[in-house]
Length: 467
Image (cartoon, rainbow, N blue to C red; front, side, top):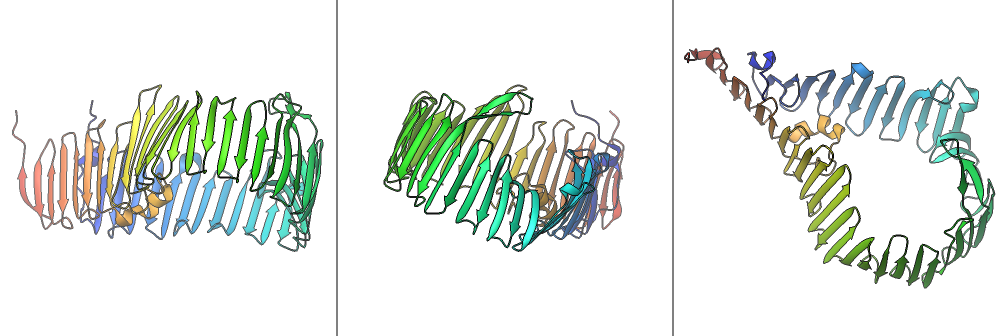
């Protein structure tokens, strides 16, 4: 059932696209103003508002959740604010951020000039740190580590991740490592070893869980190694290798043998219920079993299937197809020459709803969402390669959107725009509008009247004939 047109849809205003135009949104409730072709627009939808000068600047705000975002020559520089959280960055090299630490309930502020200077300030003194690379510093919860300390790096550096502490001397050549049940050392690449005993720890639910032990040893890395994993568990895995000649892995769940690593390999994946042969990897692979079936002679053809996924390719990258089934998600994706053509269909198996995205770089992008709303854009110079990227859509897409067509079947509204509203057509229940050539020709019809303007001068007015 179609809704009635919004009051804004029936209003007549000044229209001179692409110099200036204002119109109601087709896919959502709200209005949009465009001026100077693609170089200015303002949009208001529900509680969201966007103001932009593509490609130089855009501002997006959602007052209801205290969210603001400013982008300057995206992705060069962005400022984001959400409640008490904020972050500004310049090409990810220079950044400033602030936010609430939930553990200490204190407001922290960070400043980074990557990779030379790291700083954090907090009302809680133990959370403060300063680091000037390579001379001296402390860093917390950065660079995939809980804590880092260094003096004249790479002469000395210490890092911690969970309970494991690593002391590096003349990084990466010598280190000592210790932790809960763990001790190890290495003089890389000559020799190194590490031992971890079976331990227990408390998980996020307060339960004690077992952490497997391991033994690791290498000589002249990566040429010889001998590892034992899963110590203290039912899946003890032993592996050793003399690279690139031979690698062997043995465990209750799997056996793997590789000759001239990584090219020629055979594996018996008992836990996953399949056998696999690679000769040579990654070009020729065959797998057979309940858990997986694969036939690949790359780039000629490849077919692979397991419980949830089917993948097919012919003359890669000419044709690629992938089907993923994981309730409630059912996704099918087809690619021709990677981004030259792509078709992605997504279905919710619980609700039965589906959406689709079809794109061709650099020619067009088309998408239909779960509600049935459809949008077609010609051209699309970046969108197929980075789909659903709001920064691209706000700051760059307007510059090359030569043709935009939108349809909202629930409200029976649709619109088409050519060359930034040099031609624009809109329709809604009981309302139709056409504007052409900077508004020099305009047509408007609704339940009360039909009007035509030429050069902004009314030349025809008629009332509809009563039934």
